[in-house]
Structure formats: C-alpha cells, structure tokens
Length: 409
Image (cartoon, rainbow, N blue to C red; front, top):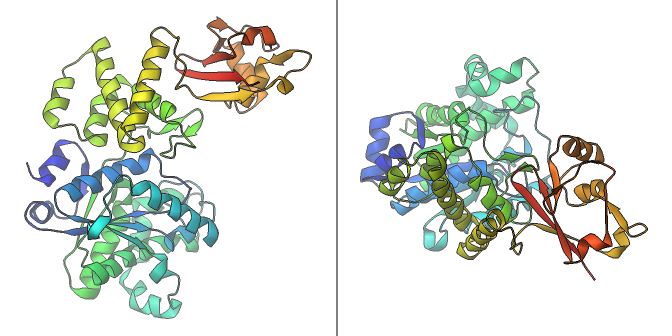
C-alpha cells in the first residue's frame, strides 16, 4: 500500500486540488511538502497532532517535510474558524512559542541529516516592502473571491479587519517562497485551511506558471462534529507541564465509543489490519480498544515509560483504587489549615479541579465531588488533619477525574 492509499484508508484525507496528480506525486516521486504552524501558544495541542502524524507518515514514505513556523503570520493571526480577532502577540512571545514548538516537534518528526526542514516565515515576511509586495503578489488576488472563502465568510458579520484580510495573501506567499527555496510542490493543512491553500496553489500558477498542489486532512472532531481536545480544564496540550501524561492518557481512555476507531486510524501507527479487528469489538469490549488508543498516543507524545506509568496508574485507580503513584497531585502543608481544618472548596481551587469557589459549590451541589470515595454533601464541609493519616486524600470529580492531595511534612 502506497502512502496515498495509507492516508486514505486511515480517513486522513479531506480535499485535494488534483487527486490523480497528488496520488502519483506521493506514490512515485520524492516530494518536498510543507505544513504551517502558527505559534499562538507555548505548546502544541492535540489539534496539531493530526498534522504531525501526516508529516510522519509522509516522511516514512521517503518525502521531505517542511515544518513552517509562523514568525510572520503569527504577528497577524489566522481568522479561520474564529469569531473574534486573535490576540496580538509580541515578537518576543512568538519567538518563545516557536522555540517550544521546535523542541516538541523534534520528538515526533526526524529532523536529522536533512530528513526534514524547519523554516520560519518571519525570515521573508517581516522585511517585505509593502508597495512592492502589493504590486508583485497582491495583484493576483481578487477581494471578491477572498471574501467568498469560508475562512472569511463567518467573520464578515462580526467584522473582519483589513489587518486579517492580509492573512491569505501572506500564507499564499509562503508557498511561493518555499517553492523557490526548497522546490516545495505540495502544501498540506487541516480542512479549515482549504481556501488559504488554494490561494497558494493559484499564486504559483499565475505568477510562475508552475504546477503546485494542495491537500487537506480531516479535523479532529467527535462523531457529533465537535472539536476534540477540550476538557473542563481547557485544551489538551502536548507539553507535560500543561497536561500531565496521566491526564493525557485519561483523555484518550475516556473517549466516546463512536470515536475510538477513528482516533486509532488517525493518531496511531497501528497497522490497519489490527485496527480493523478492533473495530469488530462492541459494548464493554471497546474498553480494550480505548486502552490501546490511550497507550499508543501517550507513548508517541511522552515516551513508552510515561505511557506504562499512566496505564498502570489508571488500571490501579479504576480497579482496586489502591495505587495512586501516577495520579496528578498537589502538595499542601499544615500552613494551609486553619484551626486544624481545610475546606473542601479551598482544596478544589488549590488543585485546579474548580476554577473558583462558585464553580466548586456547583460541583458539590450536583453531587460531583467525593473525597476518599465519600461523597461531599455540603460546600461548607471541611477536612481535618485526621483525614490525612495516610498522608494523602484522593478527590474525585465526576466519574473520571481523580486528584491526589499530599500532606507534606
């Protein structure tokens, strides 16, 4: 099976500018392609993970990936999928975020010995002469067509700034620049990038008379069409400091029955034959597939050792409930107690299980909080030092979120 057929079988491909040409390019030629990453935060998240998996599949097939970091486009911000303008970042913030992205991505894609390229569009976008750029590049873009594009449509009602309108032209220019520098012929991206990708393909054809191609891949959504990677705590990050390996594992272990096979195809390297066998499982048997998914994805992001630790912690927790070694935890001391007691609401905020005491009260009122398997029935409930005889307590939020609170000496 060629890499094109592999990507199709895994349900990764969404749209293509020319299916026949792209199939030939991927299966019969060595191709340089690129995917852009705008550094809007100091960590990649699970939405980026699909893009990285595509890069890895393509690299394994002998193609050369370019990871393009948006040192220039990040100064503007992509309006795609956003109802409001993105927060404007400083150059220092962007540079810091790019450094974080590079470090994380190096663990997932092989950048050694010219096997992949890291580039920064700030190298060519930040020093452009505006009038020359308009005459050279802007002349090839129709504002009417741009405003009809999906990435701008939904913003028109709320107000689209001229600042953001430039984004498509900048991304298209990236493709032109990467073609000149590295003979890049193919741009890849999430399906929400289709209009921007078409812009680059057409710019190369109009300005240079060159054939170039674009392909988008499936966005990571649930069977109901909602974006994956969001929890009550916020985004699911690839940085272990922002989302612990245990929480990361638990996110995939608790995924909906209807989504587990799709995620196995998109987010792991398990052979399709093995995934097709797992697809035959039903009901409670699907927990086996979920455990495999959680282990494989955690192994790719955090390494095999952390994946085993998270797996063992989860099995112990949901089995006997005795092993809490790998559970997310918070340390407190006697100084946190007032007259030998500490409020459960205070603990919920300290552990970040609730963002505020008001939210903590709501969780307790709904019966969603337990301490050491005893349901908390009142928001005024307090724990004494006697509760910490074993030096810790376990707070449970809902059915699936556990947190260990250690009493340090």
